[in-house]
Image (tube, rainbow, N blue to C red):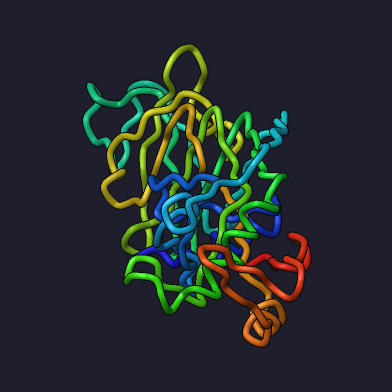
Length: 259
């Protein structure tokens, strides 16, 4: 099994956003989940379903760079010409021009994303009001409306025009990669952010290669402990169907911290 902790940590350190794991599980603004100790995302619900609200205006910024990263010396690329055989492809008739990529340890990974657009919710006051209300009325809510302290709220995601990622499924892997179109075989992680096809060996990988890949990176937030402590002590009252609070709802920065 892949050791994904280093993958998640290094991608976040380099690009400021977590990669979504499982790799083929897109995340969107407004999703709520929990993040495992290894960095895997576990979906729980959405703010629309849980709080009948949604973040307001969304800002988009496109990064012209290729986001490319690998775990280091435990990842190697070897190029083969047409007709060159290898352990993966022993028959000359099947030996196309290709790269064979070796991921030599459980912590190996390769990632390449081109045309990343970051979407960030920037109007959250109304949603914070709903979360504030839901916290105070949590004991009156049905099972599906219960409050969980591990809630992680997604307010920022990254989409990619082309997204490729590979992790070894069984501790190590070697895979053949062939180009699509006129480009040559990829010789570096950056060149995986183009049209490529997985060949023999791909069954040993956790992998994805997609175009128009939405929600492959994200930033998640949780309620600050001091906000929850304040809300626990906050006086509030109910008059008919309206609830009023003694203290004003805090700002985004006062309410949330990044996970």
